[in-house]
Length: 334
Image (tube, rainbow, N blue to C red; front, side):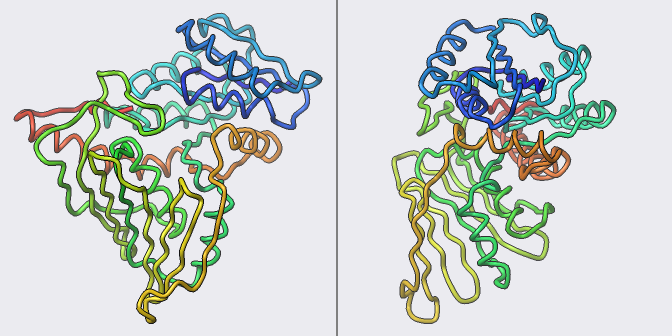
């Protein structure tokens, strides 16, 4: 029996569930845990949309972790909001044997929590990854191969209301994927003089205890790519721009379109690639299969993702501390 436990059945968690239910694994048992009855109800509806492989899979919905009647968890996915994530991990690790773990991002709100989680994961001998799934996209795997002999000089992300505070980590992870590096520094930040209620262009407004930033983040990977992330407070096309010595690559994920432009020929389009942006409901099953069948997956390990998260978190905390006029050690993003 392969036991998969999904904690957090909200908007993203329910998409994980849809994918897991389609995994090509025998004797798969899925436990979905959420104290919110509405989240459980919505997850059941999402599951009905795709159905489950009844001959190999069963799904159990629970309102409390204590209701789990197993001893070993083959894969634990924690898709709660960031302020609850570590406590959930700690509680489950104290009561169950966890073999593999996927954590949602943004990982945690306090710097100290990263080190606590690191120690817990190491002490418990858990294989742990963080869900920045662009490494799993065929388009980006192919693009990495195409770029292998070209140094990325600049990587820029721009658009309106794309939740930069919580989502910038996705693009740091993507640069890291292309460059095979994890060390970087942030050189400039301009968030104006305030923060804003959290908002996602995909899922809409979030709980009012969470915040977002509009503005820019600039930085550089160690002796490598410079990057700039820009998030505007109005609707604007989302674009990723990658610049090398010879070309510019403009990626429009929502449109599934990429343009390759020759810098030496006044920006002439030399190639165009269309692609399908996969949903989380089409990805988690593939990751699960890799973990169960080969004890590995394409996601970034916890330890590596921690290196990408912490400089970003510290930047946010410095901004909030300067804004509030006193030391802030908790950043309320999810």
